Image 1 (cartoon, one colour):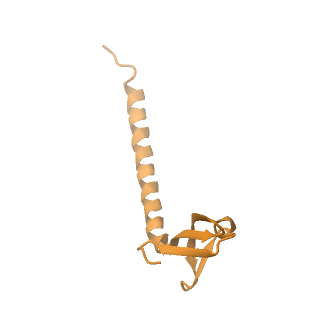
Image 2 (cartoon, rainbow, N blue to C red):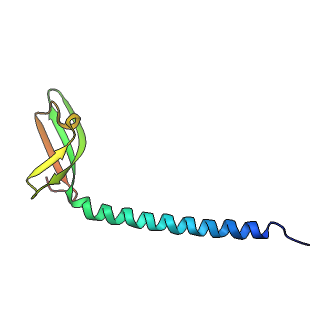
Length: 88
């Protein structure tokens, strides 16, 4: 018996292999970027005026300045920055 679907299955399998290779490559690139910038990323805890919150930010310059969005720090009396290694 003749299998007319065989060429289609081969093309589909090749497409899946190319797609998985591309996804693996993309995943590796993202992981490399995350590893590179992770030391600069901060977890922020805010406290003040009867409310508290969390957010994120990152270290800029020589490490003596942190940058975050206005809505994270607005109205906070105190902002605690936690580094990726647990330092505050």
